[in-house]
Length: 291
Picture: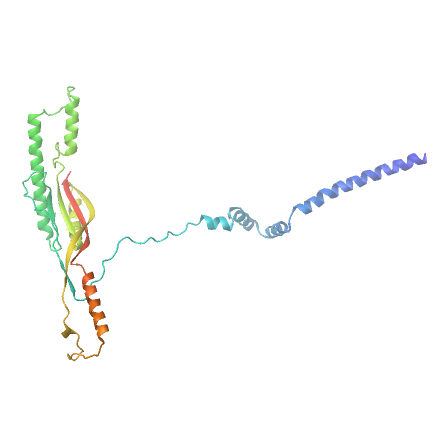
């Protein structure tokens, strides 16, 4: 009986020890799983009010790491060297004479569309007379296009009407003629061209802006460049110019070897200077036509 009572007393004590060990294990695991910085951050968030808590949590979630921010920021483009090279400087005894730009002869206003009507604009070109001249050229272009359209209508086909008897060939021909400007509206695709270089570009663009405001005109601008040839003249510098401020020549004792080197250096410079050189000018072409 005594042995049975001792066994009964040991049973509940063992159960208590097991329960205490099971309760102590999760608490120890929980303490080991949370680092120190998380506990400090939670304590700091608990001390803040609700609005500041939300803003701090949003910032912590939205802010990417510093390395990603540096990788995402675009780098400035590397500067590329310009292909345009300046012409070399000439010595003081060299002078440049500019040749006029070569251009074809201006065609007669009554010529056909195979010879384009071109006006060359200068800085001194008057504004109003140039506009009147362009208007007269456009009027003659429209007259020629109407005459050619009437001749084609009489010889080749009758006027098309939507009466249910249209032929596909006639319709296609009418569409092609209208694209070329031979149908209604006139113009025939022919245009008046204004060409200018250098400082005269502003004058040509002013005329183009004027016709751009007109209802019955189309304006197109094309930029380009033109090459011009310049002549270089080199004059010999006499020894009289090598004088001091009072006008008297300076006598300096120079060895013969140094004199030869100076003369040979001048000859080398004379040989390097070319007789002509090519100069590039910016140009603009303004095309004015009827709609």
